[in-house]
Image (cartoon, rainbow, N blue to C red; front, side, top):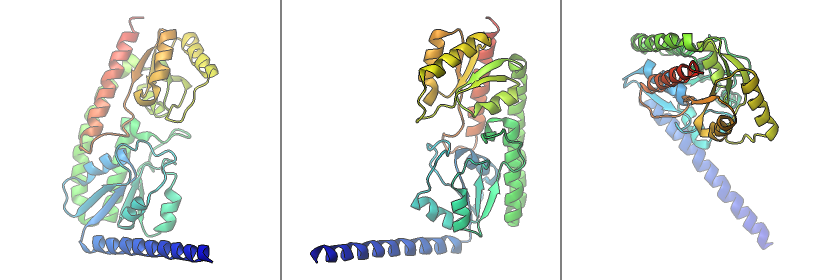
Length: 300
């Protein structure tokens, strides 16, 4: 009998906790809506930086990022109660699309009236790979889509969105010109990549991908896979391998010790600070690293 009373007491406490939590979400939601701001939430870091450049300095817009900047890519990301509370205040939710946000169905079901902006809607995505922001031209398309959809959803700020986007696209066009200047070094070269995001880099720079090994924190590499990579590098005349240092360093060291290939560690642009120019700076560094790697490759 005593256990029964304990169980009932615990259940009442849980129900009280949930009731208070839901009330708090409702109150916060109401308060956010009454302050006159238009709330835009982005799914993760590259979408936040794109939206930040479209929105600019605008007191009418509240821009928030769903996941922290160090979350990285959203593979298997699970929404938290704080995420759901934030989304309850949102007028628009900007996503990369292409399956990156595996939780999207849950969001759409929970908030059927939420405007969802798919930044990749006008991008020709690589099959089973939606890391479009890694290709400057595709990223520019994403920025244009964000501007167009935000302007439609929030006409009061459309003129400012257009001006901000035009200025950002000018900077991105300059960055694209720098990438194009490196392309004669990279075009037609066989490469191996240790992260699927670099398929977009290969596409932009005209490289031929001979082997893909998608490495992350949970990936266990077998001896057979190591042998396959070494064989591909040796037989295919691969001189440069693109990798992410966070997850690819061990494999990179192994391949460098057994072949003549150079490992070029590139930023996947899914982490960083919240500076508006962070994409420009990180991609600029990637271009510099590619130029150095393939300039060295010419000496072989």
